[in-house]
Image (cartoon, rainbow over all chains, first blue to last red; front, top):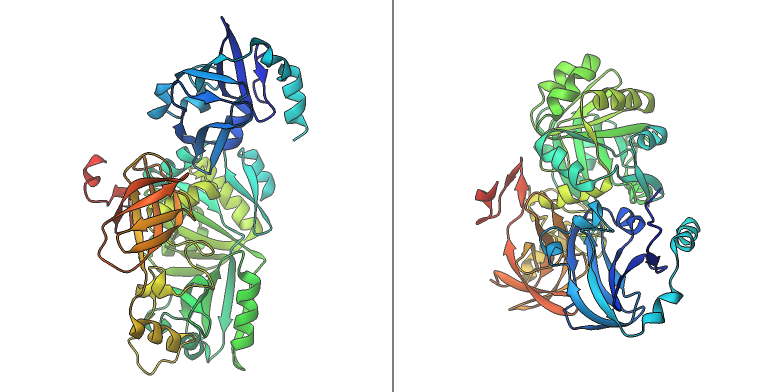
Length: 129
Length: 359
């Protein structure tokens, strides 16, 4: 069983969102997603300052098997990216909810998270796959 | 063997109609196990095909692009393509000469049905072509593979341990070839399902790591070995696929299927190049990406991540010319890459100039 922290919100496309307060969120991909992808060998993060839109590809994660787009779960502006992933993409495998985070976004609309799944909703979504 | 793979933690994918283990937890660790120790692959989806009869040698010299007359001693193996009359590749295979009237050929999984149909259609009276679907194949590969596997092979053990590379021996239930698809030493072992299952458990206890199709692909790519259906198929010739070395024109009298077409292609000149690619910029090469050279456009036929070099590598078909660099188009952007001669890695050592001192 994959790990699904209770305090996070999720998109059906397997990204997670953590509220950091002050309209800031941190975004990464779920434990379920990293496990399905296998060993990650390359991550392309967005540029700081880039605008991201819900459902649009904003990053690429590549495993030994294949490349997968990461879709932004929120609208807003990228204010920080995880530079460590350039040399250590495997952080997403080992700590998908910690050191393997991908980007921080300043939300365009603080209420936008209401459309995302809670932990239980995400658990149900991946159980149906 | 499904239960044994499941017990070893396998994740499965469908491959040519077979449920195949793609990895058992970490493809990267499996890859390193084969380069540094020993790993095993259940490749029972591939099919041994026995060719028997007094006319076997003469017929195989006609059927295959490489010349089985090179196989002077019993047990010697040959890598060859089987071609259409147009010179394009029906399949690539390993052919072992066991006796003058018995050859064993191992063909790919996805091509077995068409291969056997083609062979049976071509075979003259007195030569039989028999697919051995009931046999399983286990590849045990890596610098420690021979030492760990030979003691478990019973009456075939001593002969197996004494095999030279690209030779095979048969004894009792076992058919053992010192061959592989990884660029490392090791065996490919053919036997009845039950015997292979017992061997698997013994190898597991000896510390041989189960490896999936994923590691098999990164290992063969580092070794610069072609994958049928990706690097070549029925639309291209071996001369356009880096496999000229497997086509034997030496005996001018030998009329093998596809010879006339290949000679015409060779005489016409302007053959595409088939090259190794080392990505210099950031990203991961993947099959079917477009490439730009000074002499025109080409395509990656294979691409991936090299765990041994921690770099991305690939194989590409490009226009003739003396280019030594190219741009690979990754998500719409050109990324610089270097043209290198495969193999990238062989017997645990990086063979790419400039990178070979790093390991």
